[in-house]
Picture 1: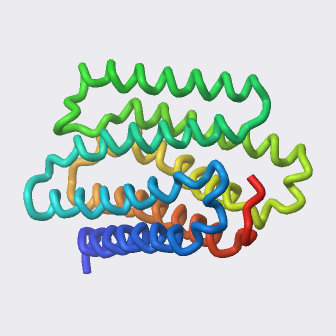
Picture 2: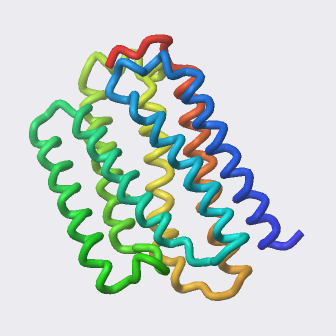
Length: 219
């Protein structure tokens, strides 16, 4: 089995795991349905459906499925920014995250003049948004560590979601930066395997959170 075959196997496993994560989120919806996290169920279902459709388009119709993921990225990042802006308490953190949203949207609009939304993945806006998500998670962790909530942090769903997101985005930024410098199938397959592995790790963290978190999330 060559690198390309290994990558395809990992990629399919990653998609399956995203579907499983969404289903587990449905099963444990009672835990968080009254909290600000309730809409993450719809995001995870959307992610799973988007990956299935994107994979089908790539395999059966055309390699140009960038528009699907460019739209997805806007929805994904805006949701996460709004989520952390709701959860952080300090006003300055909320203001920073609001600025992050504005900067990301501006970069997305203007980057469209450089990269075609229909056939090219928007690289710079993605890297910028990932960096902002990391900072937003750090704001959340700082507040958690300086409050009584740290005593029950392992049973907190958002903590596990944040760990998964942090691992993914810290790893994905270098991937996004260097991916355009590789041209051969083998090099790309090795590089994209890192992306898939990060996706798998993130979803494992999500699943741990849904299963291990308290039966009733306090906020």
